[in-house]
Length: 171
Length: 214
Image (cartoon, rainbow over all chains, first blue to last red; front, side, top):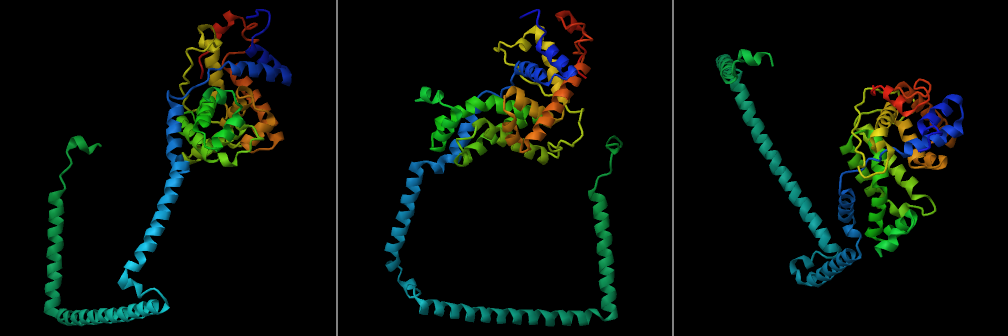
């Protein structure tokens, strides 16, 4: 080290103080270049490359070729298998599709009708129960039952929750 | 093949990697793992986060290789990706973005920066270790954006234009920020006891007067 020449940190601070911008730049560059460069944990590049390999698997020519071959095979198989699907063959064409649509619409209408019938039955039952419940003795019994249930629930809750000990009280 | 690849420029390696050469990309990772990790560590200040972000930076770079223009400098392009990754991470964690108007925080915890034991580095030796610590402390005290701009300029040796590209700011702004960053670093160093006048010429004996980093 040259003892007659001030060290970079001195030159930097002095140049900065005196407004000598260019010199401050040079000295600071010299100073910061000497800082130790932190390094990532060992095997960083290998970890990155493992992730790259996972991501780039579909970019490999062999994988791409395999995928393309598989798609072609599926298409060919589907073409060969189509004539063998007898029952579905009638669906192919405008008449078959129209037939399917009409069948579906009819089926849906029937099912909606059945659903409405069930709702009507349920509504009638609810009306009957309501008419009975509106009688004063029945209503009194229902309210009493509700009060007993609420009291029982409260008592059960009290039993289920343990009382806090003094050591836990402060937590 | 590996040796020949090793002699190529970053930009040539990037082109090779774009053509599907993982070996070329691995070389780029090996060349830039320390600069990218070092930059990120000094921004986010947590080694685990810095490592995650560094990995993310290289993965993003790999995916974006198709858009890399070999006429541009690879390092600027990569540092820009790293800078954006750091910005996103800071935003995700609810930290202030690297805004130049943001207030300076001085309560951040200092990271342990692992030194290279094999390096022939004055700061790694006992005589210079205290200055190294003071310099790290002074850098830590700077705004993150000032820290980043100083490192890009003086450690990674990027030009003003390249820094402007990395940070996405106009050239004039880069110059102003560099000026302020340098000034703040000088003040911080002086504040830590590294003042040539106070140390009476700055000889080795003067270093004993160093105060511990705040």
